[in-house]
Amino acid sequence: MVTSQLITIPGSSTPKLIPHSLVHGPDPTSNPRLAPLITAAKKSGLPKSSIDGAIARAAGKSLSGAALEHLTIEAMLPPSVAAIIECQTDNRLRTLADIRFLVKEFGGTVTPTEHLFERMGRVVVHCEVGMSAEDMFDVAIEAGATDVEEGDVGEFVLTTEPQETAAVAERMGKVDGLRVLSSEIVWAPKEEWRVEEGRSEILGDFVVDKLEEDASVQNVYLNEYEIVWRMVTWRRMPLFFEPLTDEK
Image 1 (spheres, helix red, strand yellow):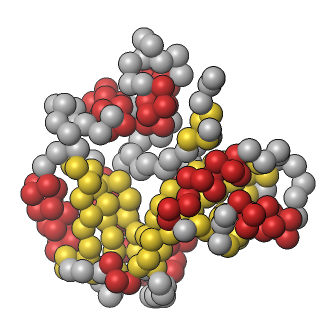
Image 2 (cartoon, rainbow, N blue to C red):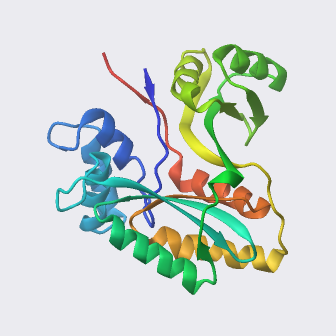
């Protein structure tokens, strides 16, 4: 069974800590896959608190041991760009106040925007053997996907119904020559806005330098065309990881 999940750890270069903790346990003494990742994280200069925090979040807890809750915050950011901000927190009121302050400081407003998005599944696979886009489409549709787009060289992005995401990822992982890179349920914009380049850059910097620096923020979804593309680029480089296969 393939287990794959995309989780943003702001400022971290070690995203594999969370999936390996999820599958094989948070104790490095009994999890041979986790121990070398912790060592690598320390060598890269990642603070011990960030490492411990990532492992704790994999167990759904904060560093203090308190259970984490999921919190979704909706907002409009200038110039009229809708946002959905997903958080994990042990203090909903504090996190809501912190994110509300950041949004207001940027000139935005916390207000309902969910109606501008829709939930869908997204599975990214890498083809290790020659396969045309047409052949991939046939395989993906048979596995339960609703659409397929070409990504980077050798990669394809599958769209699924939210409830079918895990099943599609598992089926694709069993196809010879295919490797599942990620499987997630996302907020996809129903329509994408285009704003002028300068404003787009400012908005992107706000998301990365302000919102995603908050430790509780896990994902940020926007309906602005350029930022949607850039968010995919930012997350793919350090945050997509290899699939994990449960060992029998």
